[in-house]
Image (cartoon, rainbow, N blue to C red):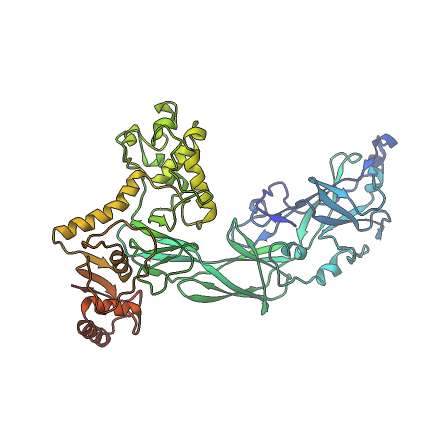
Length: 561
């Protein structure tokens, strides 16, 4: 199987040319001691990028690196006839060297004789290849009859990537190798999917982007599977050259979308088809929203909780810089989150579960002399200026937990002080992977934990002061009614709520509620009627229908006092 990646092609410009020498040159200095085994080298010349302003010297996107187990066939031609001992000889990549392994006799490297031969190679190896030595291009018929398949997934793609080359002597003519620079005989269509864009209505929060969810593909109206290159997030199809092709597909953006990429390409060329989607998702990011494994964000007021939820939004806003020490030498550039994930500046998400190792939940710093940085580093100089200041030794350091994780990982004493915490972090990162749009999981700092607790104390203080308490969304209402104590105060609670609220119901905490105009016959409408009263809510819906209000999770909203 071949691995596709980017490699420099600066030294592979053009097609290798066989250069013959004069009779005097080919005989000079040759003796029997100079003979060696036949050796070859093989490189891929890459696909020529058809985008504007591209030159062969700068192309590196569509090249191939041959790997262990790849096999090619080699021919030698003299006087328009195949040289008997070099007739579709099979060479396989073994330990980084092209090795003759077809079971036939070894081939001697004979410099003087090879000067009168032309050498040809092709990939992938085929014991039944069509090779016509009298033709200028002996592979012409074979190439013209080549057909690409619909399944071009990883492991299948390379069997359709037909390449050929004419060889040239590389190095000393008597002790050199036959060098082949392969040319792709098929063409390459590259599909670049659009991004999903959340256009946040929150003030001072940038748009949030993530890759679209990919659906189905067809190649010339046949169900097909492309080769996905993760490093470029592109989908690739080999197509027959100089023949019309049509690639059709679907993806999930703001809604299910369709596209078509078609055309005709010359052999050895590649073209990127960028799918544009002008649509954006208008979204107000709020604490309590669901964060999903594919990076999507779903409103906390959604009728159905997504199956792939991995966290809940617990803070809205840019957490960068995550540390604000008094040390004037500290800058935002010292911030580990900013350095590692510059685009993660929309908010924070708390995981659904506690971090544990093999089902064990213990204090992650149980083996430390203390909970702070003094046990992680030998001296202050070891850690000052590395993302934090000495001011952060306060028992409630105002620092993002991600920076803590970076410090622990880089501590010279991490084996003694930090391994426990790092084990918890790494175990959870493995068990619950995050999309590329998010930073890795980290243990919250004491400051972050305190902020979560402060939500409860803030609500209770407001209630005791007879202030208005507004529940923003039905999910919030359900959560606080689940976590309320018998005296009408919120209590800290961990777990899921299955609270089903229907009239009549006495609400314990909230005195007002903001919610959408929900669909008929929904449990959300039932809760809304419980809070506002059936008659009042029905009157409001009559107005909404008359005025053309929008219903549903992303529709208009009302404040019930």
